[in-house]
View (tube, rainbow, N blue to C red):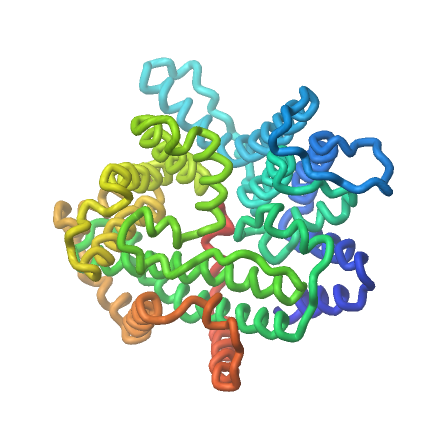
Length: 477
């Protein structure tokens, strides 16, 4: 905020024309490599592979730069070289993601299975663990979308490697999204307008995003941390903690999306909307049209539809929905809790598909439908938040009065019902169900809104100085 961002913006605007992509790429690599320089090598490997695969798919490899790049004919048969290139791109990205994200999970489950079978001698018992590179779930999906969009005839290949490296590595949304598909920014990489309106709207996005994270997500997160760390709870306390986490993850992730979109606007890019008041949804189907929209759309266009979507019969449609949601859960984290989280949403989507994309409580009043949907989402968040499956099941039992509160559980009230935390919880609830999204509210920055935006920024920065390190939740995905 006080060092890297002013430096990045200053250097970017001092550079002429297309040189801005070079400096933006260098700044992004510096930003990404700050945690671990080896992460840069991994991202560069993915970038180089997809760049050349894109040239092969578009039949541009070895051609003169003076020749225009044409779209691949969407209706023409693909050559063997084109098919091999897209397979190499997809497999290389999924291999990198699979190894770094799921190696530990796979070895732990293998050891558990062979031990259960009485074959302890076959256990791997590996002492080393693979470190998950920041943002790998996001940039591999982005990089893959480039070659797939070219293969489908939805976008032209980029000859300039720096332009493509800039797209993959752009620091505003590199480590936690939103997932920017190549077709959404292809034209912007060629030319875009830098205006004071974009820059001021970007500043508003960043200010509101910081306020969401620091003033709402973090205190709600403290409530959730205490509740989930307390063991068995009473019903009210358990729901209080679970709803606090629902607020935390929404304000935390939408905050990062706001900041990423705002930074993009400052650089002249317009990134797509990523949240649309998801807790106003009256069904799980509608929830996924409003929550993490860039991921929902990616899974729909690059997984659900290629699997056959809803075009191959009812049974296949249900199976495709469940496969997509299970893989979506696994994409978030290598643990059975994430798979169950995806399974809950997959089951609800199947039931709603059977009801004509309506909730099973379609006959309930509007606000009851909204409340029931939020309750289902909140229960599923328990599996997303809990450290392991046993803890998740224990916490869920507490929510429905099926568990016995642990000794001293009542003492958590002295921590989570303090005026500051209750006040933050209530304000979060009011904003969730009453306020417009940042995307809509900042379309026009009036003089009335300026003091609100400036006040939110100042208050967030002041609070930031007294809070402990509290990273964005999606950094670990």
